[in-house]
Length: 194
Image (cartoon, one colour):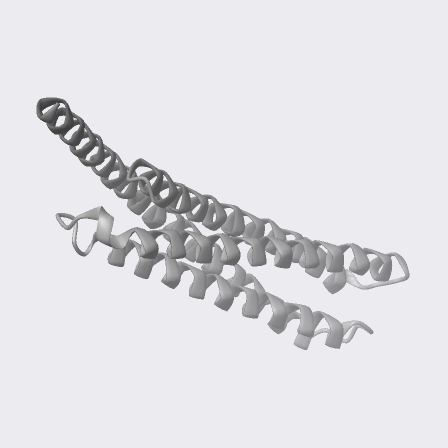
């Protein structure tokens, strides 16, 4: 009876260690994904900022009737670029925090891993929602272009669509990583019977 109980304890301990090792491997994978997403999102931000600044300059030298509207759109692109910079910084800090103590027990960080995942999912959802709003605005600008808008409006529409694509990509990447981190935390907690 005592031998059977010891065997159960040893098996449970072995399963917990195995689950911890698997979770640690999954966290290493998530770190690599965080780094890759951070690079892609930072690159999106750079392109968006460059396009926004170029559009501001073009609109300011325009004499068309939609000049002020296009300047506001360009300033929104620059603000979206700053938002992506902030997301890239968030991903970099999360990757750094997850990797600071690679030898430490994953067990002690379960709540942090789960909270990080949830925060990244929320950030991703917000970026995807912003992308949808930018697409809607671009569609509205098409009506303006059809009603005699100038060349600068057409240029704005193209850039807004590109902006929306970059925001959506950033949101999907961020959400995907967040979901993976949450899943790691939940799986490990289940394996420990929590």
